[in-house]
Image (cartoon, rainbow, N blue to C red; front, side):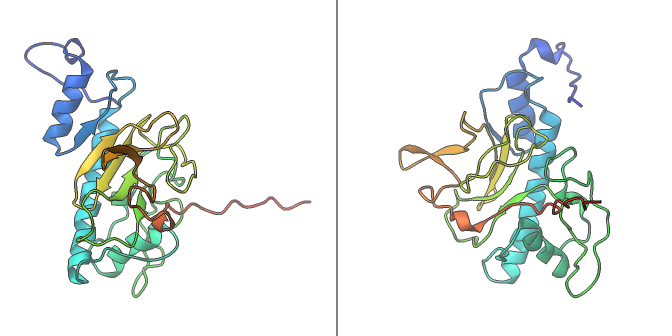
Length: 233
């Protein structure tokens, strides 16, 4: 599905997709940092959806951090366990916010809308029901340029985090959507090696590396169902 614009001055394709992409994303409060110029290479509907959902998740994480002082959820394991704290604290009661259509992490296609009950809401965001990578151990007072949320691995090769793990195919070819500690959300293009870089201290750095300031041991990937080995007859 591609976003179609009805503009009084003609077909949007005649104006250049790059301009329209930037105007539309800016209106949604999303910063585009990309050299993409083709509508086929840049599914803007998916980008806006991912970015808006991340902004919403960030708002909820911030509300939880406010309740606990300054700290975002900081649990071991996967991203799902950390996001489940939002259900436990009564900040959210629907799983749909955490799923992106056709995303490689959301193996169930979409959440089953079953969240369980108090005290642990164990059925909320089970493996295969959510799409976002999360960096735990951060607080609202940490450096504003540290990444907190991530989505959008490309379907060809995925992209590589500081863990040097290739992420599954996502819904946004060749793009990554990153939300930082200060809530700023950017659309970034991974490099040829799959790493996502930004300028820091005069150097282009992988934003998921220790050199940038990210603790790789705190990168929480979405949980996926365990692969079952077929029983031998």
